[in-house]
Image: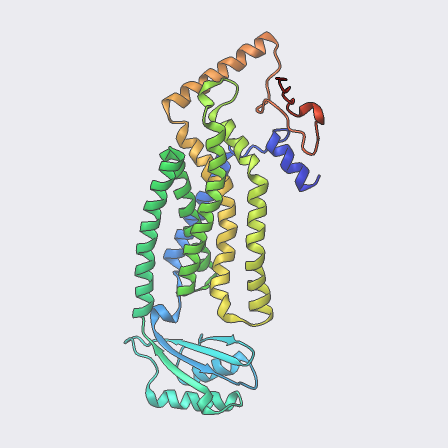
Length: 365
């Protein structure tokens, strides 16, 4: 079956995946991931970049070789960090970063000149092509503070906007929990695998929050449309109407996620690991991880959580009981259960002239 046919079947109701009905499974997966992320955060911690910890940075230009082990050996001999971060920048340039000392200072002036000389000799370039810079931790801390402030303002505005648009604080809360899930699990993956956390990572985190919200709003807009008059009928419950809305937007969400992940994956795997564009790694990596998580949370977490919260409403509880009673009466009467959708769409079928409006006869004067 093609994606086109599957999308039509899901939209019309011929087929349906029980996403909302199996929400306890998705909750369990999300809770396990969040708990594991917090454990990784408190046990392993984040591998903070030099912008947050402070330290020295050396840049080698016009290098004859890009062997990163040469720079690591030189930094180790000078008592620097044995795990000095070496990255290739462009075709013939390298960047070497070392963390600050315990007293917050970097490499001394005399030692800096010695390192520059050895790097120039090792990479077959002149000393003038080897530059050194000391980076203090203040800049990275300032970026983090402003990012945290922006995140708090973002969450408050999103909560108010969704509350006003969806006319339901439960939907707004479901979207916020999905955002929280994406943020925490992304940070947990960084802690677990030891990926470097840089200001570019912070920017990427804020970017994926916006994408996750966009995908969630697309789903919730269909939920609002399907459940607007759900209390006026006794065929389907609120949860079933929501599940139908999720199925109707499922193919669109998949297509949106795939088209968003493909260019990021190209930058990450082709640009970084094959072509050596290491400067793109920090931003591309967090976007790749975040887009995968947001694609999951917008479908399997946000809408099911909104259903769980809405089912606590006394009106919804009473309506669910009325739907169950009406179904029991139909079973006793031997009436076939009605479909969730009253009409089945027939895509690609033209009804001909019979479906066109009739022309009005002109009156003769």
